[in-house]
Length: 196
Image (tube, rainbow, N blue to C red; front, side):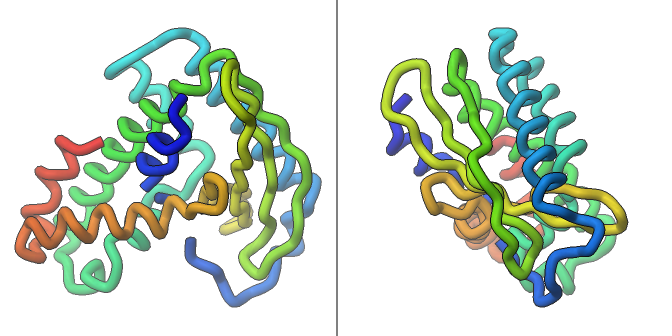
């Protein structure tokens, strides 16, 4: 896999919360979440699925492990607050499909690879879990996961590919699409449905 392609394509999932790590969230539970998430990702991509069947599996993974609505809202930015409820719902659905397609394609490059969870450290948003991806061919690289606990559920909120935040990258990507849509979320939604 071309590392440049991977980093360029990793354009989401980083808001840092002001509260400290939840008492219910521990270093061990944060690491366990990412360990299981990594296994699920590798299990899906090693089936050899491509296209719609692969994206459907990634949609399930994102829905299980990440607060997709919160991530979608963060990536859209301040305009979310002035967007109608119906457009908010339509945008989140389109965003979920977009993310599933985009990262389904990217993670498919991990076929035959391993993901090893190395450590975790407390940060003001929860825990930052560090992992290492060893590709079937090519140099290994770092993937870090921001994990938090919300409403009693442990989830990952952001993903850092060699230091590049998915959420920051996706905010830029969606911002560009929003500009092309004249600042109208209703016009952004069709673009998201085709993107990824």
